[in-house]
Image (cartoon, rainbow, N blue to C red; front, side, top):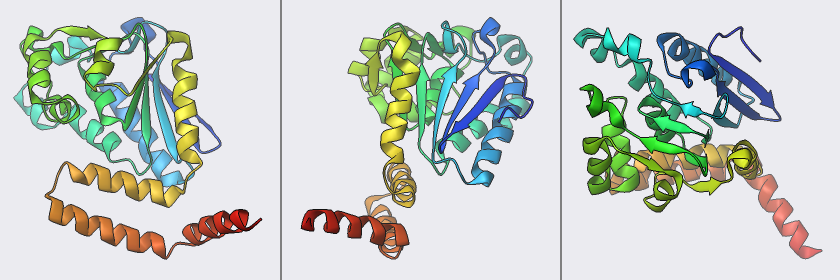
Length: 255
């Protein structure tokens, strides 16, 4: 599934999609074309209904996404900011009905770091670099960076990274909780796929509703969160897949 895209590639194999940011000559910088093509690609994957996990990866070895396209960013005005160009895309990624994993090699800066934080998990190479250097350019990480980073690593550390604009390496990113796993650079994509396949072994509806509850946990109070948890569990209790999986488990124990 290529879709005739200019800036991304999309491959699907056995319920797992791999979306590649394909502007290696620009360190896979996010431009308007990439935003539009990602919207189209993700909408197609959801509508198709076959994909149950997705891995994002950058083309080449230099970057996952090195940031936004500065030439385009320089020309944007207040009205563009209010259109939430990147933020709308990142919200879509965060809310996808299947788990997403960022497979990061090289630079993961600015909008790239924001996009990685929208994913459910981050598997990264030893040589990768992370940061939100927007203040260096006179702006802020407004694709959700000021909101998601504190939830991942705590308010104090998020302030340090965002207000200084400094760039950190993979081991430090792992220590502070910004990433889930660090592996050798040449094993990043394989490790991300391995994690995705571990998820694919589980009940698809259960995984989808678990993600829904987990995302909801950072947006609402505990009472409403527990109510959603109970409702989604009730849905799962009536599902055919739940009955089949539990029956299989019990029958194996009897043998």
